[in-house]
Amino acid sequence: MGNGSAPGNGSEPPPPPPGGHNVAALVLGIVLILLIVGGNGLVCLSVCTERALKTTTNYFIVSLAVADLLLALLVLPLFVYSEFQGGVWSLSTVLCDALMTMDVMLCTASIFNLCAISVDRFIAVSVPLNYNRRQIDLRQLILISTTWIFAFAVASPVIFGLNNVPNRDPSLCQLEDDNYIVYSSICSFFIPCPVMLVLYCAMFQGLKRWEEARKAKLRGGIYGGNRKLYHPSPFIEREQAGLEPDECNPYAHSDHPLPGDYVMNNGVQTVSYPHLQYPPPGHSRKRAKINGRERKAMRVLPVVVGAFLFCWTPFFVVHITRALCKSCTIPTQVTSTVTWLGYVNSAVNPIIYTVFNAEFRNFFRKVLHLFC
Image (cartoon, rainbow, N blue to C red; front, side, top):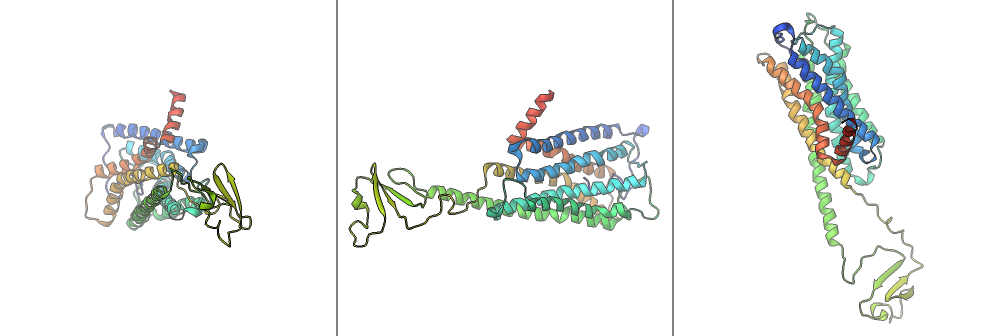
């Protein structure tokens, strides 16, 4: 998902280790690919098969997991092959451009999916009455589709020939245009990240206000003793506490009593007003509710975002620094380390879901028991 290149972008590739092959990179790459495919595959499978996990937030998480799966299947094998060869690219330049395109697109899709989740959650908290919680709707489908369309738009210049510059070194697989490196880094990381963080802050402020209002409403309810709270209905019931019916009825001794039929039933006076029409109980006011499952999902999201920023911020800082500062010397070991750290993020998300979400954890445990 790195929005850039294999090690060696803008600098000489690291010399191959003795024997010409980096076995450690090969082993690490294979383990990483298996973890990403296994973890994110389970995420997709769990949401597709478990009814409890079919929430709108989890559909966005599936889109994020698909980006990580595609990374493991389409990008990492070629990246690991290049690392195994000591950073030297021995395949065709067309394949290199395809690798760079997928690399940029999948990284961009990941962060755009996180932004889409933040937009969706902000809408759920800010305008809950217009939010569909039961199933994914058109707005959410548009959000998910837009993330992938924009991600391809950011990456497409590479596959359409941007890398075909004069004197291109075919032994290096990298982004060749520094201006494009700056542009793609800004579009893929430095603009979406602040937007996403602002939306999450606003969302949690709104959620906090919603929780405070809910608690205040519960505290304001009257329960206990001989006092009961009733919803408006055609029948108004009042329990008598040692009082006669006429004493409780302000209209009993009036020359103009309120028209209605009075009935006593086990000490409870029931007054019906046939001429008044009330809406059915429970439909007089539409109420929005953020359920416990949604609140659990919201608590996981900051951890996912934090892990993404931790893994990818070093890469983008190094990446854009090398493009803007020609005199800066960044060791190839640093470039390789931050690139690997970014790819590790694709294996982290399923672990986060397992630790922080009991429903994901139960499904993963159930699947693992089938094979163990």
